Image 1: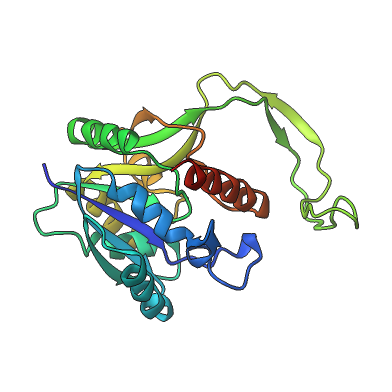
Image 2: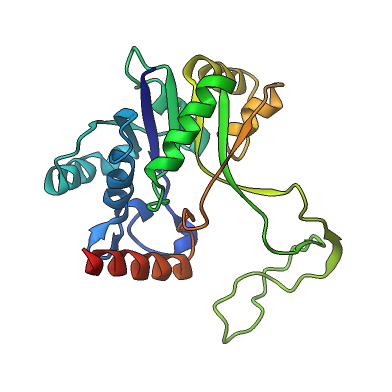
Length: 248
């Protein structure tokens, strides 16, 4: 079994509100992407890491890899596309020729553990598709659709408009998707090609397998494997990574 990882780092990270794309932001004195690559590099079942970056960020990414290496795994760069789905498809094309299993991971999740990665590889090798996720812990509310983008308060950093609850949903059997999402290579490549041919866009790779009639198995994840999306997430990651560094 030969496993590679595709790390999606081509997005702009606009929701974070920074001028530098999210993967290249300094967090606890290192670029976020470097933290994530080091976490993946500890997973011994991964032999190669494919980092998908925007073309204009390739030179910067190479500088970071040279400055903060070496890495155990072979690392190669490839260019992304306009949407995340395009970037994943292009990353899949850059896998090792002998790769059987691909682990697809967001660059903005630096706290992924080797144990979870290895579990996802084992499940995907048997079932074809594995999704790392955690059970929903909070009560779920469905709210009305609104077009108004007025902030809740002029003194608040919140940008969501006031919304009215329509329904309370049961959280039983509801899981929150994370990455990695792990697949047999022929299966996920075929799904991405079909999505391209049929102009289908979904929010994650597991959803493609579901849409085309496949089965995805859950791998229990960890709540610390959160995605850095907002300024609050960034501050939490900074605190966690700084604390970890001080413990060494």
